[in-house]
Length: 458
Image 1 (cartoon, rainbow, N blue to C red):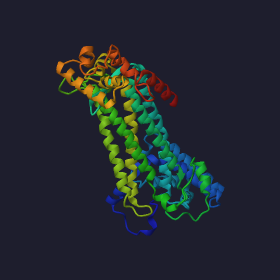
Image 2 (spheres, one colour):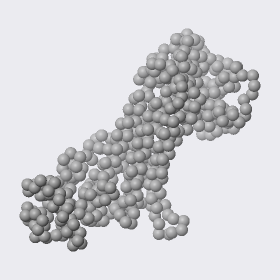
Image 3 (cartoon, rainbow, N blue to C red):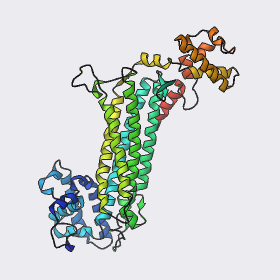
């Protein structure tokens, strides 16, 4: 039976019925919906709308539906294929189990506030699961950083070699990005954690249900303050999708870095067999498909965030059927983000750093030029002039086909009399790294301190 049939005398077009139905995807809300249904029944009992015996009967029926829905394949049964949505499905099963008393459950409630509370409950639980998955990806970053805590790597700007850094410092940059992502999702959870149930279709309910009691039973921090807003608000879904898009952007950037570093041209890292595939034609190939898929799947989540904004931008108050379209975007965003995080953690646990190649690259191509300029500053030369002097030395070194540390002291003194015997120690790879010892720098001391702080944070 439809939840809305009394007004209609004609039959629904069968093609429109399929187009209108959402059970094939919104059934993911079933356990959240059942939890809210049970609390709503109890609230009706507390308000004197239902007898205690009716509340007990309804509650027993909901528990049976919950047990059935947990059985593998139950929701896929052919006789359920025609269900309009998860809400009508629950009511139909309840009436089958307990008889007409099941129809009383919808008293004082609309599908509008029913789906709103079920979606909030569902997403709240998913955010807690996602936090665990992000944390594990952070842990994988820390594990790899500890493994290569003192190994250098060239740092880049504009994809041009810039200055030496530690590989661990590179990894901890992504740890910080993911930490911000966790904080954003926590903020999202805090804002969404209010109860919309009791708002009815748009104007509230005529029955004296205790909304604050229901909120406490379902673990909400409070209740919504406007029924129009409560049934039409999808800010929390859009906010989640936006936060998820940021997280996917961070994963995509990491994937891109690792793809580049694994090429023969760079050769800084080696991808394990567990995270690579081969070519159907070229037997020598080892492709970074795991990373390329993460990079590619970011586009899905970006699209969902954009689609949700577009979906909501022109809707008048209050509820509109357009909002049914938020579910598939929400579910796919959750699944794509979770899968991408898990694969990222797996990648991080299946790569090796080519220490020798990374170290050689870290000190080549004049990455210590800034250290040479800073050397002159410490000798008393203004930085802008020091920058100009070192620029001329770099040109000279390029013409000679040599690195800065391969020049002689006499050659350097042609450009400034401030150079002395301590020059080459100052521009060594070890000193270049150790000198960046302010908080947030790439010195071994700072990086190890940040690893310890990251571990404590987790």
